Length: 123
Image 1 (cartoon, rainbow, N blue to C red):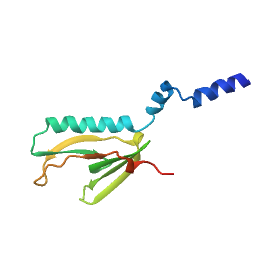
Image 2: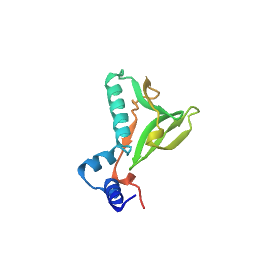
Image 3: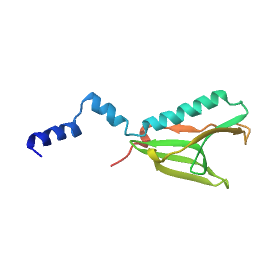
Image 4: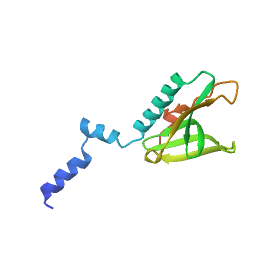
C-alpha cells in the first residue's frame, strides 16, 4: 500500500463531510427507535380504545423503551409470569411485535418511549 493509498483510505474513514455524517447515522439505533414509535402510533390509531398497545420482544411485554445513544435499547416490562423484567440489547438484535390486547386495568397502557439526554452514554 502506497502513502497515497493510506491517505485516501484515512480520508474515507475519518472524513467529517455531511454525506459521511448521514451514513454514520445509519449505524445507530435511531432508525430502529423511529420504526418502533411509528408502529406503536399506527396501531394505537387502529386499535379499539379498550385495548392496550404494547411491544412484545424477548418474551416480555414492553411498557417502556429507553434509547441509549448510539446503539443500545433498554426494554422494560413484564415477563409471562408477571415479574418486572428488563432487557438490554444492541439495536441490531431486536425483533419486536407491536400488538394490541384487551386492557388489563382500567387505564389504557401504551408502550412509552424515552430518548432524553439522561439516556446519553457516559464516558
